[in-house]
Length: 211
Image 1 (tube, one colour):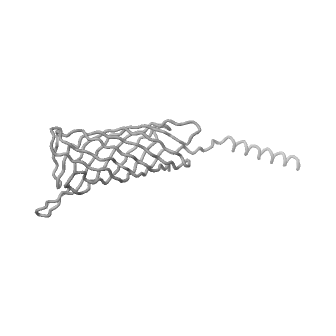
Image 2 (tube, one colour):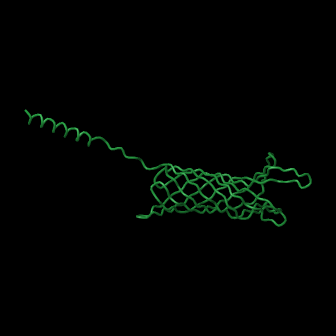
Image 3 (cartoon, rainbow, N blue to C red):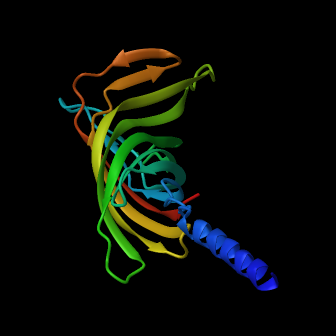
C-alpha cells in the first residue's frame, strides 16, 4: 500500500511539473518608447529679404531640448521634439537677445554595428522655426513682443553609445532650411512673402532613456 501511495504521489508531482513546463513563458517586450534630453549649440542665423535690405543676424548660442520617440521597428524611430536656444544679435549698434526655437517631427533610421555599443543613425525632420525677442521704443519706453517664424525641413545624423539596456549617450548634428515668412509684432500677424532661405545648424548632446 505504501509503495502504491508513493507511486501515485510521484506521478502527480511529475504531471504538475510537466504542466508547468508546458505553460507559455511571459517574455517582456523590448522598450518601444524613448525619451531624450539634450543640450544644444546652435550656429548664428541670418534672415534676409530676397530683394535686399536690412539683414537680421544672430550669433551662436546655447540652449536645450527634449524629444519623445516611438520605435516603429528596432531600426526606425519616429519622434517629436522641442528646442530653444538663446542667441545674441550680431549687428553693430544693436543689442539684445533672440530665442531660436524648433518644434519638429521626424524619424531616425539606425544602422546597428555587430558586437558594438555604438549605434549610428541618420534622419529627417519637418517643423516650425521661430525667432522671438522684445522690441523697445526708445522715445516712449514701450515694449512689444516680436517674432519671425516659418516652416522648415532638415536632415540629421549622429550616434548613440549604450551604457545599459535603458540608458544611452547621444550626439547628433542637425541642419535645417526654410523661410521665416511670418512676422508677429504685439500680437499682430503679417505675411512676409519675399524672404530668402535661412539655414539653422545645431549640435546636440544628451542621453536617451528607454522606460
